[in-house]
Length: 131
Image (cartoon, rainbow, N blue to C red; front, side, top):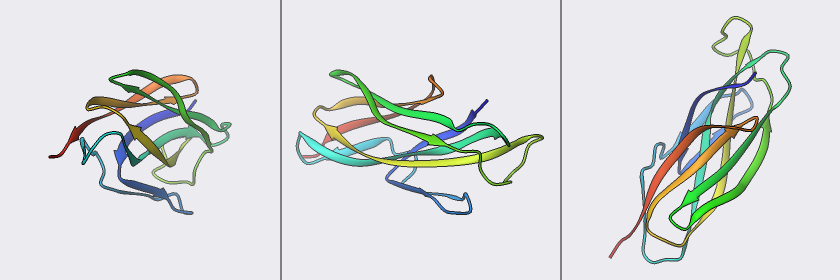
């Protein structure tokens, strides 16, 4: 069964063909905008541990905003990865996904990551208006 090792929020993230994860602007905590409403590109990235012959893990990203919960923003599958940092019987599988987040209010926002239907990580950030 897929287990989340870590997840992060970044400005940009990608997974290369060799399974290497690259993240820029990782662990972003505050998004400053000139005015609302606005849009912001955000990347959710991380690593799963999976069995070598395990079926694909189903990942889902949703959100909580000051206005309320937002349903599924994105859903995708992650297959067991290459033989990297191998634990007995387990392999790593990195993921990266970019979304365009519509921002309509200031305050606390959270992207929620689920693996196989279970919420496993919260990626919080605050939205502020710069004057």
